[in-house]
Every structure is written in structure tokens, then in C-alpha cells.
Image 1 (tube, one colour):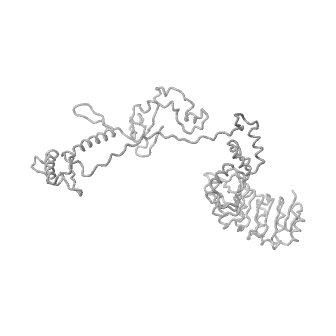
Image 2: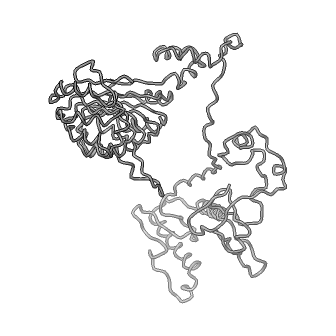
Image 3: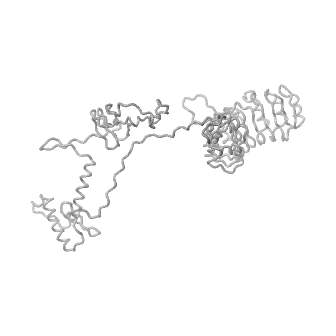
Length: 499
């Protein structure tokens, strides 16, 4: 296992190599340890990139090189050592005048020697509970011995160290600090316990959870045999059950519990009208991977919605009607590649600026990307009832959602005749794709906009109910003429055409 550092000497190669001669190096992999099971040759993902446990070299690090004490179980490459590219240079040997050079001791050895010397000096510390006269005499003798032993140059010149200068000093506690060679007390403060030794650092390996085991194909019985019906037959039976019955079946046994999590049994999940969503609910939704999810009129937060959308890449229908824009704004940062239906009806405090963030492509596009795709590029049905849409938002909608076949703009107060002209203009991509259009409750629509709907040849349903300025006679004339064929009116101002 190689290690790298970016401190001083970052160019050094620090690694361990095999000796290729010991018994562990010449043998083959066992195929049973967790390192072997991770190897690709044995069917694993190949993520750990470690050798077999039985092939750990016993002579690792014994090659000619410099041992690096800063990093555990690491040594310097011999070639880098010779070229002077090591990050930790070896200490030069101590030269002796009487014999050959003596190698310098290791830092651990020096610390141990210092600790032994300190212990020997502590044994010589006398009792400090003597009288003041004894302490004065001791100080005189200690000062004399100190001047004779440690300051021979000053003794020859006739100079004597002053009393209380460097030989002894009074501290606040009344204890004296004398140098170690005087035979007196060693230190002026009580020595604390020695720091505990550092625990050995073990090698760290990347350990990831193993992949989930495949689901059983048969149902084991208590007698030891298997049920004659296979898993595919059981799933066909479970497809006729509702969510409540499926939850009851999951309590029967562990095998049924795993089978009932199949996403084919949960094409749609409805969590609407709930005040709050708990983490077990979110985990259950992600585990079932539904194609349609209804979160209308719930208290889902932005973090919860973002967590869900990032884990539901196969989601095709999402209903968020009645939620707050603070939580719905999570759509601006979540990828929805398979989304086909988006319901944003009656969302509070939605204006053109918020819709612009939702419709425009993400600003952090990949480098070199020539085509900027919007987040709703593949949406076929969009429901925006009750929002404060303006013509500026409709222009962005036509540009970044060109594949819409069903559009709901009912009860939008700002939608009028100019909006219909934008939807049916020759440059509009929705002119050829619109099949269902809901404009109920748009009070700014007048009879002058009705001939514009003849530009949409594929239009099959047009809802103009509750439009105050539209007369029933004008709607009847449009139903009789209609684009290519006539419409039928089951209700007033509701135009339908049989496919």
C-alpha cells in the first residue's frame, strides 16, 4: 500500500514492495478471504485492490532503504535514496576519534534513555521537609559544588557565583530549582505522569457493504421443501391486490416481504393530504420505486423532495398541487429524465421569476455542451391551474417545453386573447402537438379568440367553461366548424372530438 504526502519532499516515492522469495509471495490466492472475493477474477467488483490475506509478504520493508518513522509501515525507495529525492534523510553517523563511526540512535531510543536518566535523578531527590537552616546550608553546599563542577573556568579566576543567582532561586511555593548535577532537588514543580504511549496504527482498507443477495425464486416451506409455484406466478397473484393487502402479505414471511417490494406491484403511490412525511415513509417510497407519486397538499419540505427526486430516476408522474413554492423549488436542482406529467396546480406565491427558474436550463451545464435542454424538455402533460401566469411565462414555456400534448391553464387570471394567439402562432411548437387544452375560468377570453383554435389540427378536447365573456352561440359555431372535423358539446362550452 503506497502513501503520498504533500508536505516537504513531496516528490519522494514511499512504498512497500514484495521480496518475491518468501513462502507467502510464491503461493496463489486462496479465493475465500474478503480481499479475494472482491477481486474481479473471482467475480467481485474490484474496489479494495488488496492482495490475498495469505499472500501478505513476511519480509515486507526489509529491502535496502531508509525506514520512515513518520508514516507507519512505510520505507523510502533505495533508488530515490541514492538520488537524494527522499523526504526523510537519514541522520549522519557519529564520528569517533578512537574508533570507527557509530550509527546515531533512533528517536525512540533517545527518549527512552532520557526517561531512564530522569528516573535515576528522581531517586536522589531528598526530603524537602527540612528546616530553614538546613535548607540554607544545603543551598551553600549546592552552590559551592555547582561552582566547582559546572563552572571550572570561573573558579580558576577567583570569581564565585552570587548567592541566589543561578544556583538557587526562590519560587512562590518556597521550593528551590537547582540544576541536576548538584545533588539537590531536581525540579521546582511536581512531575506529572508520563504520557501514555500511542496505540499502533493499523492499515486501513476501503470496506464497502456487499451487494444485496438476489431474491429467492421459490418459497421455502416449514417441512424443508419448496412451494410448487415460482416467484413469477406469485407476482402475478400479487398484482391483483391493493396497497393495503400487499402490506398484509408482507407480514406473512420474509420471502413474501421481499417479493412484495417489487416495483411492478407499486406503479403509483398516493401520499396526498398528509401533514408531514416521516423518514420511514420516504425510505419506503424509494425502495418501491413507483412510476407515479402523488404528494399533493402535503407538508413535504424542500430537503425531503430533493432527497426523493434524486433517488427516483424512473419517476414519470409527479403531483405537487397545493404545496408551497419553497418545497417545489427543489425541482430546479433535481434531475428528472423520465418525467412525463407534472402537476403544479394551486401552488402559493408563484410568479414569473419562480417559473423562469423552473423552465430555464440549469446554469451549470457541462463544458462543451452545445445544446441547452430545459428541465421540462420531455414533459408531455403540464398542469398550471390557478397560477399567476403572464405572456412572458408562456413564451418560456413554448421554448423549453416543446413536446406538450396536454396543457392546463384553467383559472389563470392573466390568460387572455394574446395568450391564445401565442399558443396557436405559426412559430409555436404546441400548434402541432396540443391535444388537450383547458382554459376554464379564464375571464379575459372573448369571442375573438375562438377562430384561433382552428389552427390546431390535433386538438381533441377544449374546455372553456366558466369563461364569462364567451357566448354560448360563438362556442356552438366553433363546434360546428371545428378544426378538420366538428366537435360535440356534452356540456356548455366544453368541446370534445372523438378520436
